[in-house]
Image (cartoon, rainbow, N blue to C red):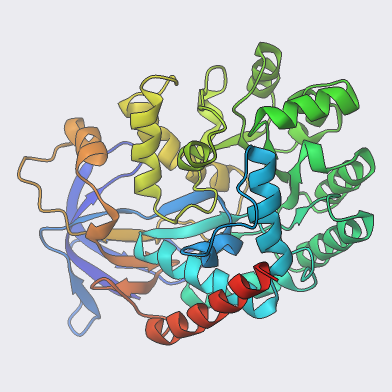
Length: 419
């Protein structure tokens, strides 16, 4: 255990500001404590003049895309979303091997930690390297000190044998650790695979993590093939019956689908920058505002950036405002708490070096949140009571050594993608 001395603490739920010393207890489910004095000889970090608050969490990530930055153009220039998947992301995920998966996870965990993110909900795909892939991811995140909720992206797109391998990897992992049952999307998952995935989720008291209505293609394919819209199909199969289910994107929805979502137990992950990058449309939370959490969809690991993007882009297309932007940013903690997932207790904190030129109060915090706070100001990060970032530097792993490894693996991946 150790102490944060002279803290200015902002309660992430009610935004009340408290000045106190904070005792940090180590453990995934341990709690912090406010104290009036610090025993002599204790380990102390003096945070006077800095902001201390709850660390951040990502509601939908793709660590497997971490080595994509700077890669060459695809063999064919995509003309639509389906071709973006086919010529970029499905080419990439088919090229991954175990070392590349580990490199991707380490890179993502480090980037997350340095941005103040201590919990990542990830959606993984590596169809020719499925076995043990979730354990590789888990070990890498653990090494850096970032808590996680993982799943494998089961899909029929590479054949039913590979889909079965995804189901088996999921079941094997859920026997050992907390996780979700991942599916790609309605248009790549047949009825039999969907049914089996729901059965595994029920068996392990888990939920489904799946892309839903990200692009109109998903809706058009589902209506033509199954005579239902995406959310209607998922609802009929029981996907929305789980408190732990996360539906990523949900852009192209009918009024009936919004009504179904509003009455369901499922949560919705907004990924605004990915939507912009893929030109698939704009998010609108109308009808299910209280169910929205924020993700990055593998674009980056900076949740402050995601919150600002959701706010600014949403001005013209969404129901978002200052309070709801912050609510979405923090709603992932409600998801984790409601479902009793470990690793997101009060001993997960960020210390922000925020030299504001204007006063900061509880009632003007949201203005500072949108226009002032930035991940570059994250000085210290505490995950499950352990210091994983101190003075902007990762404490748990050798970052330079890992970057050498990730660069080597990235070159191998890019070469393999071009073969």
